[in-house]
Image 1 (cartoon, helix red, strand yellow):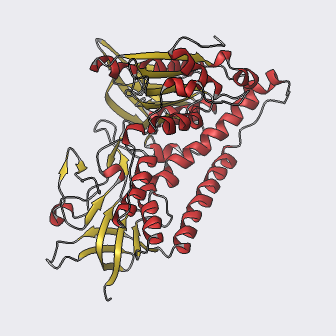
Image 2 (tube, rainbow, N blue to C red):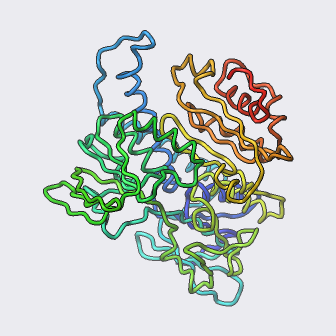
Length: 470
């Protein structure tokens, strides 16, 4: 088969790759995307961000009907869980969105080749060659440039090797055909807490085992303390500062050996979700042969996402920074614009981090602990949702908004929210901080009444101790 030639070949159709492909095509590039899945969207759309949020929303509806409707004067018979229907809805959400990306590719004339791509050793002619393993064998394509956007995969713990049945990753945890009696979650990060919340709401006993003393280790300490209190009230059991030293699977049950200081114990579970983190997918890409340098398990790039090899670029989970879909998307967009000679900027200091538990926890910017460690003078303002009118109406009063501002310049350095719809509210903080605003400016801006966002205004007022409703 003759070689097909393109301006840009992208390996990976996740949030970074597909955004880069669409924007590059809009700017006149002939683009090919190489993707191993039949559906577009990568891990995020197929087995990560989207299906997990679909189940989180469905399980929250179930919990509301079971435990909260009556307090609103809505009396119903105890709801019955139809897990198969819930999973089918989740799959339908995923299909609609992945089909949407396929439509956008077609609309923007982005070509797709299903298979696994590998960069071939340079021939010295300035042309990039990518070998793609397809169902019928291999196919080679050429391009002026190649963008690596292959994303990440779950980290496997040697003592807890995935078997897909009892010892599972986040992928299998989204597809369980029955509610586990006892689910042990190893890892108290975003993924572990979110999926643990789903199955706890649906009736499972959930135990979270974390080696570190603090969950969500890079989140503001006050936020994590408040969130843990609420999650404990919801029935999640936490074993912090605890190691898993061994595991055996007997008759479909996992027997975990735990160690916390001098204390040792065993836990029996019918499912163990191992969610200790994710790592970049770098194997099989031909990096070494192509001359692409890595450091600390990530690909080194410059401000244009150019690797050490001419004509080869990388974005998203493959390069330094948090492994987040929205980071990858911003980098994909910026890469395409830079490639076309346009000005583009990614605001790395304002990447939001969100735990989609309920209540949600969302943060942007600096934590109080990091400011203290660096000796940066700051002022702190807080406002609890218990004093917010809309939160009262919703009967969702757990949590608060916390704003950190520089003591001398008043520039907002960090915004942290634990509470209802924190994931949506943090967008205001991201945009405000990207523009370098002060807490006084935030405090004097209109916030419609009654809204949850008024808590942001009140927290900004509290930075200078002029809060009204507390």
